Amino acid sequence: MSEISRADVEHLAKLAHISMTEQELEKMAQELAVIVDSVATVSEAVSGDVHATSHPLPLTNVFREDEVGHVFTAEQSLLNAPDAEAGRFKVPAILDEE
Image (cartoon, rainbow, N blue to C red; front, top):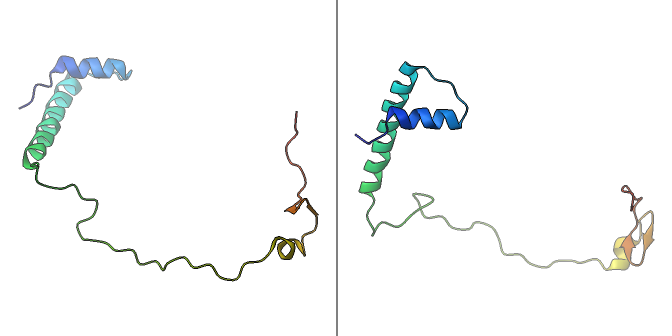
């Protein structure tokens, strides 16, 4: 069993501003020790020759390649714009420029 003491739990509780009774401190120390031991067990199982994975099955990209299709010119894009200036859409200002 790992060395998570009641004093360690009390110190962490004080840092987190959590009030705990004596029974809660003892119980939490035991529970944290089990968690630390479990993590240590899992860490032992991993060897250096095992590659990290994000998914158990190999994945391939199913998206099609981007292909440039019909492209509007700037003049065509601004043809029906309510207002334009210097080749751009002109919109009402919403922020003060102070």
